[in-house]
Amino acid sequence: MLRQGPIPQALQGLLEYLAGILFVAAPFLFGFTDAGAPTAASIVFGILFLVLAATSQGPTGLVKQLSPPVHALLDAVLAILLIAAPFVLGFSGVVTPRNLFLVTGVVWLLVTIGSRYGRKERPAAAPAEPPMTAVPADRVDPHRPAAVPPVTDGPSLGSGPVPGGRQLPGVRPATGSVGPEYGPIDGSGNRPS
Image 1 (tube, rainbow, N blue to C red):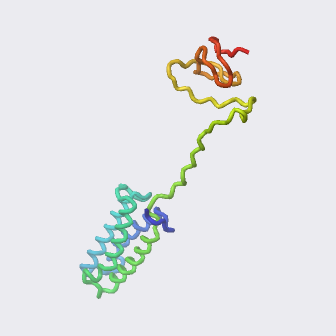
Image 2: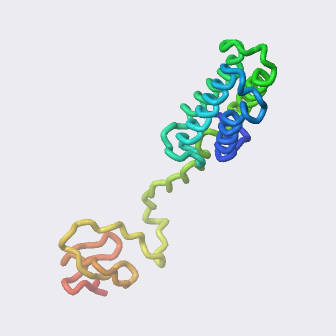
Image 3: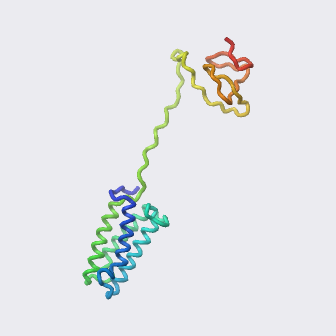
């Protein structure tokens, strides 16, 4: 399971969109459009940021395709590629794009480490009720009605009495049956006194 960092998933998604816009606009904002490799790399990384943000399953995702673990992995890879790009693509001598890539790569790696990609932890399920146990006959309160188990014998259901003289809709007592604590039941559904 992913570590739950302090940066909420919605904020991380918003930062991802902002980073994408920044990288697409950076060559024009910072004036390095005359350098071919940094300009192309900046626009490609900006598009990667935007695609990653849009396909995330997070609250800011539009397509909701990338699961949180995959999204976290791709964010980490993107941060590492940002740091390596000036050296691999040969523009480490051009100060402005090099610094932009290095600083953004380090910051994005920290954002990735501190983000809360997974869903919030769900509270543990409530413990199940303890199973019912039989109470010895000498401990039964005669003034308290006994628990009535559900009747599941289908078509023979009607209406009839329950312990304590109440009527349960849909329950018909069997003629001549004997209740363990209440004695025989006659054909009319009443107990003889």
